[in-house]
Structures are given as C-alpha cells and as structure tokens.
Length: 348
Image (cartoon, rainbow, N blue to C red):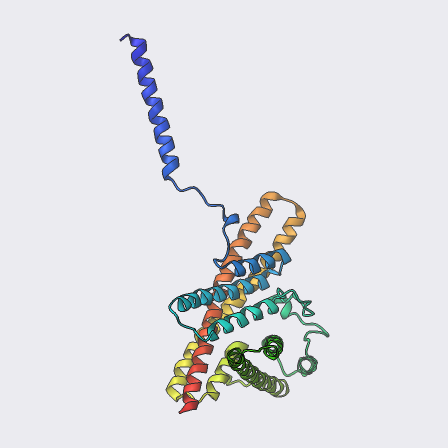
C-alpha cells in the first residue's frame, strides 16, 4: 500500500468519525420545542377559551386574572376526572358545580358570546383613577361613593382603600347577576323535564343554586351596609384589615361562631393572605405600566428596544399570573375553610 492510499484511508476514517459524532449528537440532544405550538392548558375547552381571550386582546391585568381562574378551573376538572374514574360523584353534583363555575368565568370576562354591557377595560390602575362620574355601574354605589369622596373625612390613602372596597362590592354584584342568570336558565330547563328521576336531580340542583343566591344576596346587603357606615363615619382606626376580600373573610369568620383560639389562628392566616393580595396588586400595577411602556416603544419602531421591553413585559406577565394563581387558590381555600367550619359550628 503506497503512501497516498494510507493518507486517503486516514482522511476517510477521520471524516466518518466527525460525521458519526455529529449525527449521534443531533440524535441524542433534545430539540428545542416550539412554544407557540404548545397548548397553554391541558383541557381543550379551557385552552379554547384562553385562545379566544388572546384574540380579543383583553387588557393585560384582566388577561392575567383570567389565566389564574382558568388554571384553578383546570386543576379542579382534572381532579374531578379522577373522582369520576373511581366511581365517585355519581349524583353529578361536583360536575354541575364545575360547569357553573366555568360559565361564571366565561360571563365575567365577556367570553360567553353574549353582548356584555360591562366595561372590559378594568385594569388595576384604571379601577382606582378618580373620576367625576360614572365610576360605578350600580346607582346606589355611585351615589354613596360621591358622598364619601366629597365628605372630607378621608385621606388620599383612605380614599384609595375605600374605592377598592366599592370596586370589590361592584364585582360581587356582577357575580350575583351572573349566578341569577344561571338559575333562570336552569329553571327553564327544569320546566321541560319529563322523567321523574331527572326531575329529582334537577330540583336538588335548583335548590342548591337558590341557596347560593340567597347567601350571596345576604353578603351583598351586609357589604353595602358596611360601605354605608364607613362612608358616613370614616374608617375605624382599630380595623384589623384594609383589603376588601380579607375584610369580607374576616366578617364571615366572626359571624360563623368560631372559638376565640380559632379566630386568633385565622386572623394570623388572614394577615399573611393580605400581604399576598398586596403583592399581587403591586405586580398588577407594574404589569400595566410595563404594557403602557411597551406600546410607547412600539410606536417609536426601534426593534431592539421593542424586544428588550417585550422580554421584560413577558417575564412580568408570567410572574403576575403565578402570584395571581397562588393568591386566588389561597382565597378559595380560606373561603372553604371558613364556610365549612362555620357550618359545623352552626349545626352543633
């Protein structure tokens, strides 16, 4: 074998080695996934709702809130599927409740296909801007708010906190109207039932919805009375909490006949929850500001500057969703705990 043949063979072996290492590396290393084609949610109907919301271009804070609600809904539906597979929920009560919660989410964010007269633009910052009129849809709230605003009894910070309570009460009114609409639809379906077995099931569901409506109306009346009292007398310096959802939970707990030790424990937990709510609100503010800045930069047309701001906005959006989910899940757990324990005490 001459020298040229040896050289040729060596080069061939080296080339095959390079190719071998190249292709084996390509085969073994995971390829980056295309995030655009990865569904946001595992359940198809929930993912469809999310995609519809993106097409509608909901404001960033509302989009973040919706994401948290859908994430909780998905988690509960996946848990229900496991229960159903194990032969539980035979009466379908859990399934009916999940369906109702899903419909409430659709109606709340204007995704149910109905014409929604409520303004979608209700981001955190805009909720708390001072307006001369038209701040609240409910006439009683609007009248009470205008009186409080012009009374001179509140500092700027107290007025901001009071407006948050008014806004929360308006959201509760909207939720009540959605549930009432769902009950009306159930009653229409109930009229068309022929089978006695179906009639019994639907009657039970109807009683449950009426009980829910009654409880919501009681909470609304108590909430409005609280707002009326604060508007006329000002905030009590000894008030334990300042966030509307926390105040509502604390009032529920005090009405539920908890023991003193249970109330003390719950009060501490509510303090932690209030910190979580405040953190969530802070991130909502930052998200809205980041969105406004991104829109401003996009108008200037500097691609590099746009990308930097978009990256910051995406990170902030993800963080706001994460905190929002944890906050709403904690709210759900606390509400369930107070309601369940309250019922136990009332039965004794």
